[in-house]
Image 1 (tube, rainbow, N blue to C red):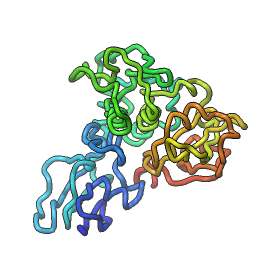
Image 2: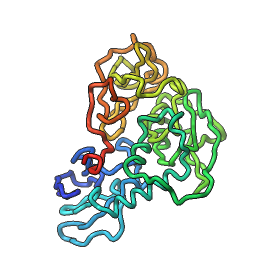
Image 3: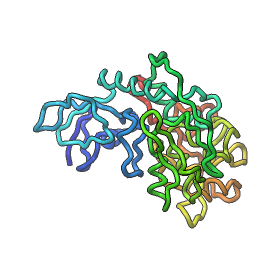
Image 4: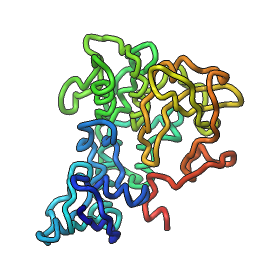
Length: 317
């Protein structure tokens, strides 16, 4: 098993691991941010460039470093590799530039976005964003679209991470949407205005790192920090039935899959659990779901907490 040093911490990892996977083994606070990589989605990664790191030593045999920053989600570790992440000023500066690029067209509509309070881009902008931008051109504008009976698409917010496309490709028999156009004209859309209708389409909402895909059954019902997320399960023939119920009193406002410390779904759930099982008596409630200690969801009324996945060493200090 190769040994790699990341931010002066040595760790032994399985052969074939990427730098990002190795950093995640150290813990959430040491892992580079990732907006497009998703562990359970084959082929994901390499698109958003937020996980760039500096390789100062390629291996024990090759003590030279890589001249340019590399995407940690796509770069396989070698024995003796030395990597700088948060301790590199070059990496931090590049990450700020990437955040600025992601925010070029992203609208400032957090106050009305259902993703607010659990948005990866919000956390990324807080940790690495700049107060001002050099970009002066008009933002691109797209109309809000219904891409099915249960999902609404806000293309203005999309950062083209491709996660929803990979979900449709790998969880369903027939994908009905994808990326249309090229360059600055690229957008998520359905082919010839088809509706997305399959039993696992709701997972597109869970994997979206921004508020581009939203749950129409939860839309504008509540802010997430006014709800209590509770782990629950039920017998389901389509999926594991292990979910998080977002409660307001005894009312189930929405149902989502359970996520790990990196915001990735532990298991994908079916639409029957997500959209059609909104009665509390249909579920066996296990207890409070674990949330980040600095998340707005945890403020003032929540007990089960963990360290935030996006926390940098600067924030820890």
